[in-house]
Length: 286
Image 1: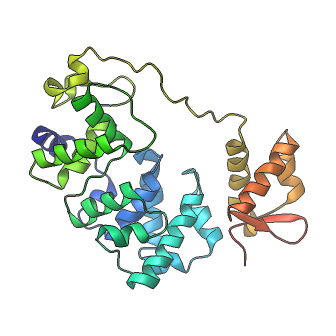
Image 2: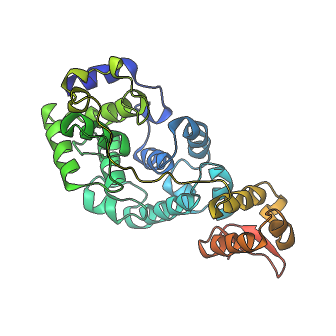
């Protein structure tokens, strides 16, 4: 795996949170934004976000409507509210300083196994194992000779990660290097094996690229409640005072029942709230 770090030093993308001057809180923000979202879409949002709210205290005190507007079209907007909850927790529990130990990190709202390890590796240069989907795909192909990554992190993947990290003497750069390899070279579709620094050690390549018998079905978007929710959120983000009449929001969608369901679920998630008796507004409300 040492070749992966050398490859990373030569070919890594110039992403702003990799500047070397990013605060631990900036790393937390980047990792939450990057969940299920390509880095190219995150860059400009992260930069604007960190300029506006550079510390947990800044974000903790922001109106939730402004937070959701700034989140824009990154998707899964509940992440924005969870990030604000994390900021409030860090400010109250840790005096605004992101902790470095696993137990404390995992106590922060919205930070699970992967994000805690990523913060340890990228913010504090600790030898943690951050198993995102790119890392898991590389490990599974190289060591197991298969191309099936489960929905959840497995014990075997943790073992493989520990084995790979030990092979580079626990170099904290390993996480970013393998993530980048999975994002740019060892991709899910049409991997670029001729550009891979460890292709000669890949069990999946040696086995002739066997395909799994089945994969989890891809999530559709067109016509779903998620699409309806996204359209409503986009309209509210662009409205004066972030407020739109209920009638207009219902008329945005051909299926009125689906539109009503989307409004109710958004309100239940704290992403919108009633403004009077005939309108909705962005954010949690008071």
